[in-house]
Image (cartoon, rainbow, N blue to C red; front, side, top):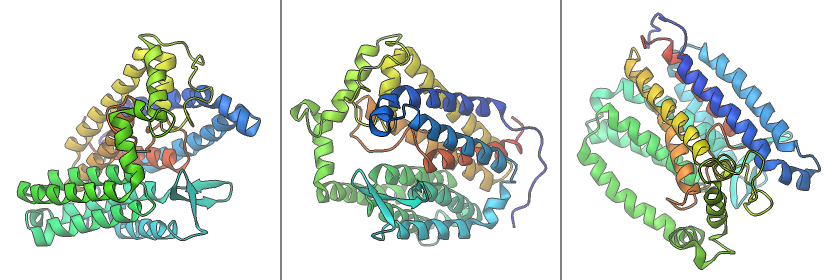
Amino acid sequence: MQKTVKTYHKPDYILLGVIISLLIIGIVMVYSSSYIWSEYKFGDSFYYLKRQLLFATAGIFSMFFVMFIPYSTWMRYAKVILLSCFILLFLVLIPGVGMVRGGAQSWIGVGAFSVQPSEFMKLGLIIFLATFLSKNQKKITSFKEGFFPSIILIFTAFGLIMLQPDLGTGMVLVLTSMIMVFVTGARLSHFFGLATLGLIGFVGLIISAPYRISRITAFLNPWEDPLGDGFQIIQSLYAIGPGGLLGLGLGESLQKYFYLPEPQTDFIFAILGEELGFIGGSVVICLFTLMLWRGIKISLEAPDLFARLLGLGVVSMLSIQAMINISVVIGLIPVTGITLPFLSYGGSSLTLTLCSVGILLNISRYTRI
C-alpha cells in the first residue's frame, strides 16, 4: 500500500499563477469571441460568459478541494475510477442516452448541462496507469506481463472513444498513455512493433471514415473546397493573418461575425490571435510552456514512482491537447475537434481539467522545489 509522505511546503504558486492567468485570459476571450453568437442564438450576449464563469467557479473550487487530497488516495480508488469511466463510455453510446453534437455522440445530458465521458476517461486512465505501472515497474520490460496489459487497456478505451467518434480526444489519451509507459522503462523494440501496427490502424481509421479523408485533403489544400471542408481552417487563417504583431484590439475581431463557426470553442486561439496579435498568442504559448516546465519539475521531484507517473500523465495530457489545438488553428495539422485547455468554452472539459491541475498541485506539496 502506498504510504503518504510528509508534506514539505505549500503548493507550487508558479504553476497556480500560470493556470489562473490562462483561465482569466480564457474567460475574457470566451466573452469577446461569443457575444455576437450569444445575442443571435439566445438573445443574451452574456450567455456563454455566464456559463463559462459558472464552470470556472466550479472548477476552481474543485481544484482547491483536490489539491488537499493526498495523491496516494487516488491509488486506492484507481480501479473504481477506471470502471466508472468505462461505464460512462458505454452509456454514451446508447441511443437516447448519448447526445449527438457535431456528428459525435459524445455527451450525456445532466439536467440543463451535459458531461463528456471521454474527458473523465483521460484522467481516470492516467490514475490507473500510474497505479499499475508503479506496482509493476519491473515487469514493464516483459511484453506479456507488463507492456501488453497496458496496451490492451489503452486501446480498449481508445476504441470506445472512436465509436463516438472522437479522434482528437482519442489521440490525446493514447499519446499521454504512451509517454507514461515509455518513461516507466518499456523496451523500444516493443514500441517499434506497436508503432507499425498503430500506423496501419491509423490509416485504416482514416480510410473507413470519408469525413476524415476530407479533413486531410482540406488540410493539404483548403482552398480546393473553400465553402466546404476547407472553410473552417481558411476562416481561422483569415483571423490570425490580420492580427499582425499587436492585433486589431480586444473585441475588434471580424471573423467572429458569423465567419468562423463557434469561435468560442475549438478555434478560440484564432480569435485571440486576431484581437491580440502575435504578442498575445505568444504570451499564451509561453504560459503553456511554463506550465509544462513546472509540471515536469514537480514530477521529477515527486517522492515516489506513482506520484511521478501521475504528475507526468497530467501535465502531458494538458500539454499535448494544447499543442494539438494550436497546431490545428494555425494550419499545421488537420482539424481534430479538441478544445484548448483553460481557454475554450466548455463544461465538463474545463472542470475536469482544473481537477487534474489540483492533483498536480497536491503532488507539488510533497516536493522540495
